[in-house]
Length: 312
Image (tube, helix red, strand yellow):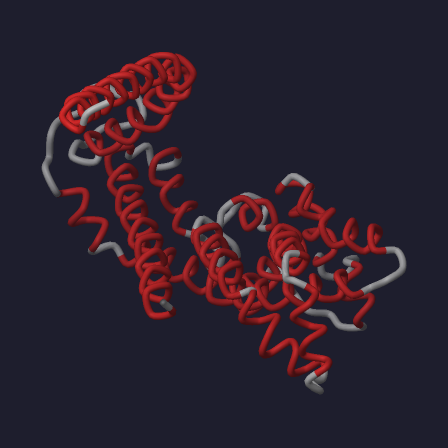
């Protein structure tokens, strides 16, 4: 075959291959679209539509009946931002988050290290650490409510104290924190345990040959290798802790706690919508909370990207 013939045939083959690939992509999209269509429909119905509806209601004075709502612009947002009770509830959620996130991160790491290095009965230790996470929130909260009850609670009896955990504002939030640590540490523990099992054993063997002790191996191998999973654990716990609601409400007998000390942002929003029947105002408060959660999530993504670029 001459050079001129090859010059003519090569572009023709390239065009044919490109056309074939394009047809395959179109066919794949058409077939794949039917698989994702149910999810897209449900996502639009239960996420997109409620979000858009909530945004619209936040600009109205709608009540729980849904009748007679009129457009009032930004009045709900102005009232919410000037409401000290909203800021107090946000402060309670932030305080709970500041207490829970560091404790649960450290505790999950220590439990994972313990379960990873135990030789006998590994499965029973892993089951004990993870099992509380399988309990429904109401069951765990009711259990700890009984444990913290003054006079008859097992917690005070075991420690030999008489602390009013559930009736004193100085201890109420701490009681919710203790219950949350026991109930939710299993999930972070499982993430850390999976990450520990993924660290190559030859790294530790090489460190031992170089004379590194257990502390040096943990500081220079284990912790750096767990940096990504630690960032994930912290981010998930921050987002979950800011949404504090069920365990605090159940432990405080469906109230805001002594002197409103455990009323979270979510509880405040629900009170405005279903107790005061101010659906428009509650929608505005929930949109504010949505923006706060979105800012936290975006900040985490930005920090993670910055760290990855710095390590390159």
